[in-house]
Image (cartoon, rainbow, N blue to C red; front, side):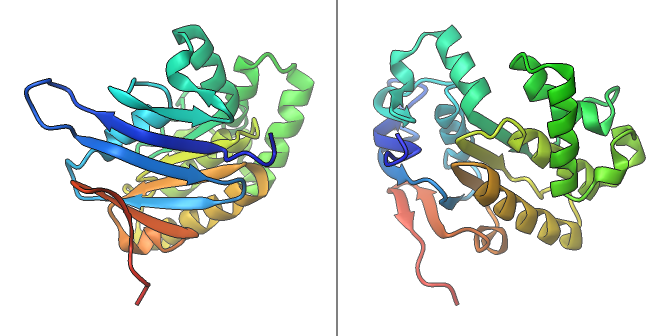
Length: 229
Protein backbone atom coordinates (compact mmCIF):
# COMPACT_ATOMS: atom_id res chain seq x y z
CA UNK A 1 0.00 0.00 0.00
CA UNK A 2 2.88 2.38 0.80
CA UNK A 3 4.03 2.27 -2.82
CA UNK A 4 0.61 3.16 -4.22
CA UNK A 5 -0.46 6.74 -4.91
CA UNK A 6 -2.57 8.16 -2.11
CA UNK A 7 -5.01 9.53 -4.69
CA UNK A 8 -5.52 8.82 -8.36
CA UNK A 9 -7.97 10.43 -10.78
CA UNK A 10 -8.63 8.68 -14.07
CA UNK A 11 -10.54 10.42 -16.87
CA UNK A 12 -12.76 12.17 -14.33
CA UNK A 13 -15.79 14.04 -15.70
CA UNK A 14 -18.72 15.85 -14.12
CA UNK A 15 -21.75 17.64 -15.55
CA UNK A 16 -24.93 18.78 -13.85
CA UNK A 17 -27.23 18.79 -16.88
CA UNK A 18 -27.07 16.46 -19.87
CA UNK A 19 -27.81 19.34 -22.27
CA UNK A 20 -24.94 21.50 -20.99
CA UNK A 21 -21.17 21.14 -21.41
CA UNK A 22 -19.29 19.23 -18.74
CA UNK A 23 -17.86 21.26 -15.88
CA UNK A 24 -14.69 19.32 -16.57
CA UNK A 25 -13.82 16.03 -18.19
CA UNK A 26 -10.82 13.81 -18.76
CA UNK A 27 -9.07 14.81 -15.54
CA UNK A 28 -6.06 12.65 -14.66
CA UNK A 29 -3.99 13.07 -11.53
CA UNK A 30 -1.71 11.02 -9.32
CA UNK A 31 -0.80 12.22 -5.83
CA UNK A 32 1.99 10.39 -4.05
CA UNK A 33 2.70 9.97 -0.32
CA UNK A 34 4.33 13.08 1.13
CA UNK A 35 3.25 15.33 -1.74
CA UNK A 36 1.49 18.65 -1.17
CA UNK A 37 -0.29 19.93 -4.27
CA UNK A 38 -2.05 23.23 -5.02
CA UNK A 39 -4.92 23.47 -7.48
CA UNK A 40 -5.72 26.98 -8.69
CA UNK A 41 -8.60 28.26 -10.77
CA UNK A 42 -10.93 31.18 -11.30
CA UNK A 43 -14.40 31.24 -9.73
CA UNK A 44 -16.84 28.97 -11.52
CA UNK A 45 -14.33 26.54 -13.07
CA UNK A 46 -15.34 23.68 -10.78
CA UNK A 47 -12.89 23.77 -7.86
CA UNK A 48 -15.61 23.10 -5.29
CA UNK A 49 -17.13 20.40 -7.50
CA UNK A 50 -13.74 18.72 -7.80
CA UNK A 51 -13.24 18.90 -4.04
CA UNK A 52 -16.61 17.22 -3.46
CA UNK A 53 -15.65 14.42 -5.85
CA UNK A 54 -12.28 13.92 -4.15
CA UNK A 55 -14.03 13.62 -0.80
CA UNK A 56 -16.69 11.22 -2.03
CA UNK A 57 -19.42 13.79 -1.34
CA UNK A 58 -20.48 13.66 -4.99
CA UNK A 59 -20.19 11.07 -7.75
CA UNK A 60 -18.57 11.60 -11.16
CA UNK A 61 -20.47 11.05 -14.38
CA UNK A 62 -17.53 9.08 -15.69
CA UNK A 63 -14.01 8.23 -14.66
CA UNK A 64 -12.87 7.36 -11.16
CA UNK A 65 -11.52 8.73 -7.89
CA UNK A 66 -9.26 6.12 -6.29
CA UNK A 67 -8.23 6.75 -2.68
CA UNK A 68 -5.71 4.32 -1.20
CA UNK A 69 -6.53 1.83 -3.93
CA UNK A 70 -10.30 2.04 -3.45
CA UNK A 71 -12.56 3.42 -6.17
CA UNK A 72 -15.00 5.68 -4.34
CA UNK A 73 -17.68 5.07 -6.97
CA UNK A 74 -17.68 1.37 -6.11
CA UNK A 75 -18.51 2.02 -2.44
CA UNK A 76 -21.98 2.49 -0.99
CA UNK A 77 -22.78 5.57 1.07
CA UNK A 78 -21.94 3.98 4.43
CA UNK A 79 -18.59 2.66 3.24
CA UNK A 80 -17.76 6.03 1.65
CA UNK A 81 -18.59 7.85 4.88
CA UNK A 82 -16.39 5.51 6.91
CA UNK A 83 -13.47 5.85 4.46
CA UNK A 84 -13.83 9.63 4.50
CA UNK A 85 -13.92 9.70 8.31
CA UNK A 86 -10.79 7.54 8.59
CA UNK A 87 -8.70 8.69 5.65
CA UNK A 88 -9.52 12.34 4.85
CA UNK A 89 -8.98 15.55 6.80
CA UNK A 90 -10.67 18.83 5.85
CA UNK A 91 -9.61 22.45 6.38
CA UNK A 92 -12.18 25.04 5.29
CA UNK A 93 -12.14 28.80 4.80
CA UNK A 94 -15.02 29.19 7.27
CA UNK A 95 -13.22 27.16 10.00
CA UNK A 96 -16.37 25.16 10.99
CA UNK A 97 -15.29 24.76 14.61
CA UNK A 98 -18.02 24.08 17.20
CA UNK A 99 -18.42 27.19 19.38
CA UNK A 100 -19.62 25.34 22.49
CA UNK A 101 -16.61 22.97 22.60
CA UNK A 102 -13.20 23.90 23.98
CA UNK A 103 -10.14 24.04 21.75
CA UNK A 104 -9.09 20.59 22.97
CA UNK A 105 -12.55 19.12 22.40
CA UNK A 106 -12.78 20.55 18.89
CA UNK A 107 -9.43 19.09 17.90
CA UNK A 108 -10.23 15.72 19.44
CA UNK A 109 -13.66 15.40 17.82
CA UNK A 110 -12.55 13.21 14.85
CA UNK A 111 -11.08 10.70 17.31
CA UNK A 112 -14.33 10.63 19.27
CA UNK A 113 -16.23 9.87 16.06
CA UNK A 114 -13.79 7.00 15.42
CA UNK A 115 -14.43 5.55 18.88
CA UNK A 116 -11.07 6.43 20.47
CA UNK A 117 -11.26 6.42 24.27
CA UNK A 118 -11.18 9.64 26.27
CA UNK A 119 -7.71 9.22 27.78
CA UNK A 120 -6.04 8.50 24.43
CA UNK A 121 -8.14 11.16 22.73
CA UNK A 122 -7.07 13.85 25.17
CA UNK A 123 -3.41 12.80 25.00
CA UNK A 124 -3.37 13.01 21.21
CA UNK A 125 -5.34 16.26 21.20
CA UNK A 126 -2.79 17.92 23.49
CA UNK A 127 0.08 16.64 21.35
CA UNK A 128 -1.57 18.07 18.24
CA UNK A 129 -2.33 21.40 19.92
CA UNK A 130 1.34 21.68 20.84
CA UNK A 131 2.32 20.85 17.26
CA UNK A 132 0.14 23.64 15.85
CA UNK A 133 1.27 26.13 18.48
CA UNK A 134 -1.85 26.57 20.63
CA UNK A 135 -1.23 24.11 23.45
CA UNK A 136 -1.73 26.86 26.06
CA UNK A 137 -5.24 27.52 24.74
CA UNK A 138 -6.66 24.02 25.25
CA UNK A 139 -9.41 25.06 27.68
CA UNK A 140 -10.50 28.19 25.80
CA UNK A 141 -13.59 28.49 23.62
CA UNK A 142 -13.23 29.51 19.96
CA UNK A 143 -14.89 32.89 20.54
CA UNK A 144 -11.97 33.86 22.80
CA UNK A 145 -9.39 33.37 20.03
CA UNK A 146 -8.15 35.24 16.98
CA UNK A 147 -8.97 34.11 13.45
CA UNK A 148 -5.50 32.70 12.99
CA UNK A 149 -5.74 30.74 16.22
CA UNK A 150 -9.13 29.32 15.25
CA UNK A 151 -7.71 28.20 11.91
CA UNK A 152 -4.98 26.38 13.84
CA UNK A 153 -7.77 24.48 15.60
CA UNK A 154 -9.11 23.51 12.18
CA UNK A 155 -5.69 22.30 11.02
CA UNK A 156 -5.17 20.27 14.19
CA UNK A 157 -8.63 18.74 13.87
CA UNK A 158 -7.96 17.82 10.23
CA UNK A 159 -4.72 16.04 11.09
CA UNK A 160 -5.32 14.44 14.47
CA UNK A 161 -6.58 11.12 13.07
CA UNK A 162 -3.51 10.91 10.78
CA UNK A 163 -5.45 10.96 7.51
CA UNK A 164 -3.89 9.81 4.28
CA UNK A 165 -5.31 12.81 2.42
CA UNK A 166 -5.83 16.40 3.61
CA UNK A 167 -8.10 18.68 1.56
CA UNK A 168 -7.82 22.42 2.24
CA UNK A 169 -10.41 24.70 0.61
CA UNK A 170 -9.27 28.36 0.56
CA UNK A 171 -8.10 27.97 4.17
CA UNK A 172 -6.78 31.54 4.52
CA UNK A 173 -9.59 33.46 2.82
CA UNK A 174 -10.81 34.96 6.13
CA UNK A 175 -7.38 35.79 7.54
CA UNK A 176 -5.16 38.86 7.45
CA UNK A 177 -1.96 38.51 5.36
CA UNK A 178 0.31 37.78 8.33
CA UNK A 179 -2.00 35.11 9.79
CA UNK A 180 -2.52 33.69 6.29
CA UNK A 181 1.22 33.25 5.72
CA UNK A 182 1.64 31.57 9.11
CA UNK A 183 -1.35 29.28 8.47
CA UNK A 184 -0.13 28.20 5.04
CA UNK A 185 3.34 27.35 6.36
CA UNK A 186 1.84 25.45 9.29
CA UNK A 187 -0.54 23.53 7.05
CA UNK A 188 2.22 22.51 4.65
CA UNK A 189 4.58 21.44 7.42
CA UNK A 190 1.93 19.52 9.35
CA UNK A 191 0.60 17.75 6.25
CA UNK A 192 4.09 16.51 5.48
CA UNK A 193 4.71 15.48 9.09
CA UNK A 194 1.38 13.83 9.83
CA UNK A 195 -0.50 12.93 6.66
CA UNK A 196 0.02 10.98 3.47
CA UNK A 197 -0.57 13.87 1.08
CA UNK A 198 -2.42 17.16 0.77
CA UNK A 199 -4.32 19.28 -1.76
CA UNK A 200 -4.74 23.03 -1.37
CA UNK A 201 -7.62 24.51 -3.39
CA UNK A 202 -7.02 28.23 -3.95
CA UNK A 203 -7.32 31.14 -6.37
CA UNK A 204 -4.19 32.77 -4.90
CA UNK A 205 -0.81 32.32 -6.57
CA UNK A 206 0.94 33.33 -3.34
CA UNK A 207 -0.88 30.61 -1.41
CA UNK A 208 -0.28 28.05 -4.16
CA UNK A 209 3.46 28.68 -4.10
CA UNK A 210 3.68 27.06 -0.66
CA UNK A 211 2.95 23.70 -2.34
CA UNK A 212 5.35 21.28 -4.03
CA UNK A 213 3.66 21.78 -7.40
CA UNK A 214 0.80 23.81 -8.82
CA UNK A 215 -1.93 22.76 -11.24
CA UNK A 216 -4.56 25.00 -12.81
CA UNK A 217 -8.13 23.86 -13.34
CA UNK A 218 -9.79 25.44 -16.36
CA UNK A 219 -11.80 24.49 -19.44
CA UNK A 220 -8.89 22.40 -20.70
CA UNK A 221 -8.67 20.33 -17.54
CA UNK A 222 -5.77 20.21 -15.10
CA UNK A 223 -2.54 21.72 -16.42
CA UNK A 224 0.76 22.42 -14.73
CA UNK A 225 1.51 26.05 -13.99
CA UNK A 226 4.66 27.42 -15.57
CA UNK A 227 7.88 28.14 -13.68
CA UNK A 228 7.60 30.46 -10.75
CA UNK A 229 8.84 33.99 -11.28
